[in-house]
Length: 236
Image (cartoon, rainbow, N blue to C red; front, side):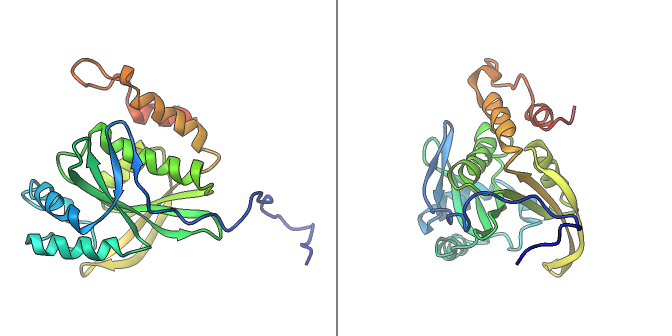
């Protein structure tokens, strides 16, 4: 069926669809790795999240804090069998799990995928590993799998998540009001994305930030990632 030529139309999309589903495989970086989550990760994760005394890191997750090691094991056991979300444990160089994240709402038919269900223990937050694992997932999605769109969604009231999305190079697209209910409370959902055409410049920004030369002897960054991603996207 031909389309009318007197109406505005989106540009033709090249490439083959559906794109491959992400293989649930280990992704290795300089500072640690992403490993498919397993029940065996539960003791490490339970101990790492226990460092968050007030449980603030659980606020915007759809699950409650784990009260016992058995609860942690039960959740990890369930997560390891999930295809979507596809959960990964974040492991440091010593192989100790200190957080988890996932790829979800995986849509090979249109080449769209979301990163979410992110929970990092205090020891992982604001580290090079925390940034590296986000870059590793982007590289996997765009370079290895050929997806067109990479999404980030969060509670619109979750200021740290919104700031993280901006720092990582996501573009804010709008807020879906009363999108869902989480833990008995309304959630307006803020949407962000990175497109495949933006990725090459952002990849270079991540490579520059993660390079050893970007850190001094005290491990302090010389150039902020937010500045590099903003430059990559022409926002300066």
